[in-house]
Image (cartoon, rainbow, N blue to C red; front, side, top):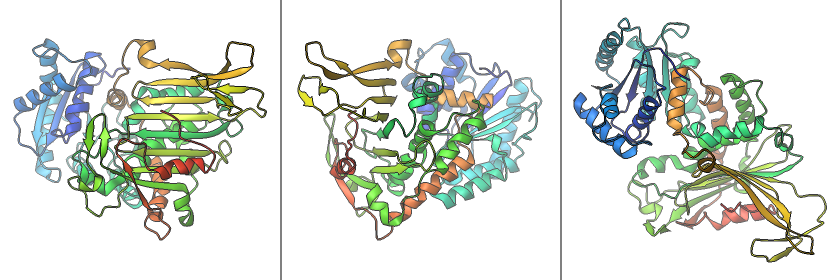
Length: 509
């Protein structure tokens, strides 16, 4: 799991929050774990005028605050890492800025013992999405993109989300990027795919023989995916009001989780084998018809409330938010897949801001036995009669990564009464360590040239094709209302009714 090729990592948007909170800490951890090449350098590129020493100091301060394994302030490892940091100021649409970058990279190559311009480069686009295509075009014009078939050096580009804001813009962005880069040089990142428990979905399903035979419409009643955030828009009102929960969370994170849960076993874990199966799932999403949009979708918007003793203002009063905004901060969907494995099985999705806690969990509820032979109790001993408790498998992605299986066991005594019991796995308890940060895994995979956990162009397009239908429905005469919900609750009451009318309920988290 290590490359020996001298590598320079260039972060566009290096003055941004993501660089300080996630990218530099991830690179420091990879250095600490001895997973980066022996010869590597990191270049920050941003519009901000900054001396190299200032950039090094800012990143050192960020590591002291945000690193997973925080270094001592004056430690040798911190000094050695910051000495690898360079800074280049420039504009994303300025050819001269990229000429200067090319010269800097050539100097770094020579210091690493590589012919100038013959190094391997990883470009990370941590910038606003409206400059993605522009940066890639400039890299091409500056001659900073290696031949994709060159065995001596490589160029790879990580592109942050959002990748487009609808199908048309995603298609256009793909076209522009692929006019400069080969598809195997493009790494569209979704940090959820770097989380240990997300990868554990595949390990759990395909590395064990117990559950996969049950993982289909014959035994599963329904699937739920919840991605809850306990924060409001918090200073990002201007961006969020143009995006909303559907674009911000469903199109990327949640549909990727759905694809991993629902996909067929791949022939191998080669990158394209896995991604081929995910594309099949996304292509099998049944489009929601305009006249059914209110039946299969719920929109909500948070109002004032309290979360953990912290007062949350009304969404419409947030800075940058239009006072008449109809942007959703909560969305619930009922999704169906038209394929052999899942035909007729609903997938319920919900996500929102200003909910009671931060949690991402996938719940698979299995069908009830055909005959009710036993009475059931809940944990307080209350007799539920024939209200049978289902078998539930819960996969928690964050926080406290783990897996829980709920099943019934006989309560001690003369009566044949069952009580639901949990069998749990907790990542931290078993491995006595916190899981690595998603960005650590994803940056390392990019350096190694493994694109398994990244999103291919046809995955993006298939996801947007489905989401575009919902967005169109929300602008039609059939659109559902925007339901208000109090901050600190689990969304509007309509979201609960959404489930109860199907004879189901949201999983208790």
